[in-house]
Image 1 (cartoon, rainbow, N blue to C red):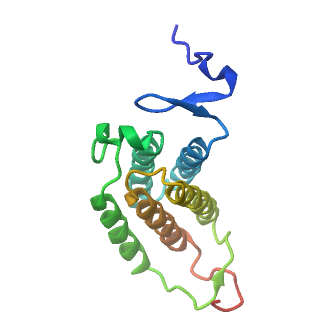
Image 2: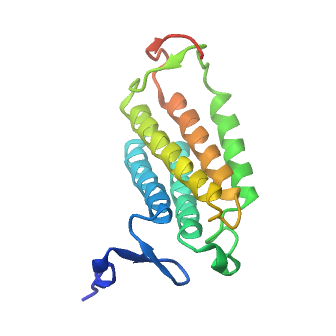
Image 3: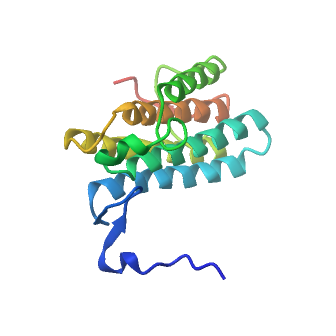
Length: 185
């Protein structure tokens, strides 16, 4: 029988990748916890994207890459030299691939000059929820950066593009005539 509990966190701390322990309320677990939450929210999106194999594949790749970001964020800056590009460390190529995804999806939609209210379709609404979780993760990672707790800020750029990519995917998954309000601010 495989046991998933270690009892190590019963004191309110959690272990970091490559060693060290921090409080579960620390900014680092909050940040990688939000990245994990985003990957789970994207799982709901992928499960709902049964009619579009391309979108499903892009969501799955994004989920996989979020585990790379999570591993990097779960590593103390002093152990960052042990991270492996694309496996446990976000790369510039990952950011560039998201930019290509954003362009590919946005080329297929007519974005109105107004705010889009989420919920044009169930899938687009799920994607918008995942997008907001990614934005929260990004804010938390920026907090780590401002505290000097990031060895490399590529992960900030990655999360920024990831939320933009999910926005583009949501608009692609939206009904042709989403509900709109207001103007651009």
